[in-house]
Amino acid sequence: MSNASASHTVGDRSAFAISWGIAGSHGRLHFIWDVNNCEVMLQQSPYGLGFSVFEIYLALLTVVTLYIVSREDRGDAPAVTNIIAKEGITVTCGVPSEIMSLFQYGDCDLLRKSVRMMMVSGREPFGILLVQELRALGRDDLKAMNIYGPTEATISASYLDVRYNDDPGLLEQPAPAGYSMPSYSIYILDENMKPVLAGIQGHIAIAGPISSGYVNNSELQKPRFVPNPIAPFESKEREWNAMYLSGDCGYLRSSDGVLIFQGRIAGDTQVKLRGFRIELQDIESNIVAAANGTVARAICSHRGNPSEFLVTHVTFFPRHGLSRGEQVDFLLPQRP
Image (cartoon, rainbow, N blue to C red; front, top):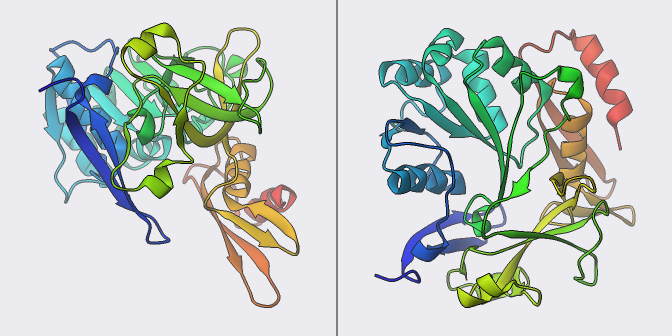
């Protein structure tokens, strides 16, 4: 077995019936987390999601105990928090909405007694409600991390320790995606695929120990995995000569180089309405971001023929404290 040997393949089928599989190799699995072999880690993400690879390989590479949640209990917040307490789980991972469900519907007292570290995927906003729930646990020793990186980047390319016990007024919302991890390079590119200066918005590209590409799908791979003309010497030595064009938009903060993730560029959700190209996911993410932690999810769809229009369905968090009328009044100014 060599560094180039395949370690895993993550597969999926999109809403448009486009099948793909992302291949990873042993030499591209890099984890730097402060995890010791006394930890007990929870594996609850569906196997079709890249985050499940993160959970499984983090446990294998750091020799921690891994508890795999049964199919019946996945998504059942009370059952999961009971498992966390019963099995002495100290490390949990998930997207913000997944972690929020543990607080909203599970037993917070059980979380308070066991969990030492929470790793949260940064492609959903790490909002103020999640910060408030973490603060409410009253645990100074609980470490919360915001992680950014698509499956094609071998799950995580940047991270940030979220100082949730700081003055809430000092916390940025949503939390930045953090600093690039060792061996990774994060570039912000313009429309001509040239790096831009810090502070300027552009296309997020990731290089380093990224995936080797899509399995048997050169049509999908060619526009997304491209040669990296500015790869550092260390990457060239390891034959990490490509970079992945994420389709995400963001910039590097001028003061410290932290990555600020701002959502998607043009992607699968782009539609044309009355001559205008509209990114449905941008509408969704902007509504969630403008809601300041009160909206859990927004789904926008393109309807009508020939009279076309957009419809957005919004789900509020249970503790938002707004009446039905206040919800409508709040959402109206957020319309595109």
